[in-house]
Length: 72
Image 1 (tube, one colour):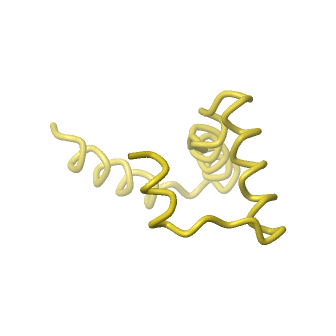
Image 2 (spheres, helix red, strand yellow; image 1 turned 180 degrees about the vertical axis):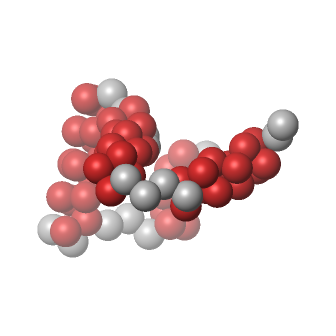
């Protein structure tokens, strides 16, 4: 059974559940299992991104063409 078929079967099973508490448990489980890319980043990567956002908010920007010249 492929992934899409499994998902459809799972949805069908969930639609047939009448127990609200069990549905809530399924919902909580799915939300906990969803990975946020931010949590996958190292602390140093998170700090660099935060620093970049802070600089952008202060108006510190570099034109894209200038950036390309700098990295070439």
